[in-house]
Picture 1 (cartoon, rainbow, N blue to C red):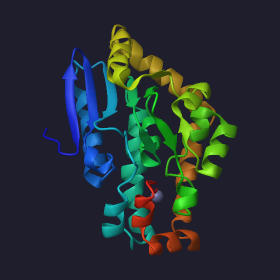
Picture 2 (picture 1 turned 180 degrees about the vertical axis):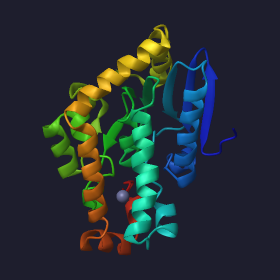
Picture 3 (picture 1 turned 90 degrees about the horizontal axis):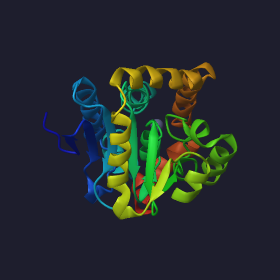
Picture 4 (picture 1 turned 120 degrees about the vertical axis):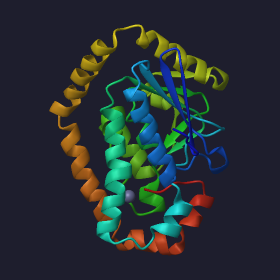
Length: 265
Ligand code: ZN
């Protein structure tokens, strides 16, 4: 399958799915998200692929959801239309990454914001370059109750999640490592090589073993309520889209949020 906003490569049992809109800081357009989901399915269905790496071209992993596109095509969505759009592209696509039967590794550099932050945290492991930072500023910029998938407390602990979501501040690669959200921090020029090396090491185990091991590990979180809690937050997030705070941010123009380098839910 031919892709435009992503780049799909396979080599030695590893599929790498690159975000490939560096000129837009890899903002997640509708097409990019659809292609990411399609590429993930392609990698799952290919018996030669054992491990999947999510990466990004350019200096930044992703600025989050494409606000320019959102302003142009979705600013006046009804509750029903927004729900349908966000349930499929933000919630379901994310859950497919989490539930992917093959191990996934995110390789993150530069900015990894809001929707991009959400996507990388659905992966099993994260490798970050020293310059990477993670943030979800949408409570401040958009009046939105975080992004659609509130994965944050599950991957960095409740207290850290509260800190970064309440303040909108950046979590540096080192702080993310300290919080246990990131597995390795490496110099920028070693990022891709480290992710591939890790993928190769994992790929040496039998695929079926990895698949059932991942199911068991994911069930540890599910037994604690992961899935129900994410679903509940999705509903809450939708409510935040019809608040006065959100509407005034929208009417002030999402472009202002784009200029300040912040992304929206
Ligand atoms: Zn939203």
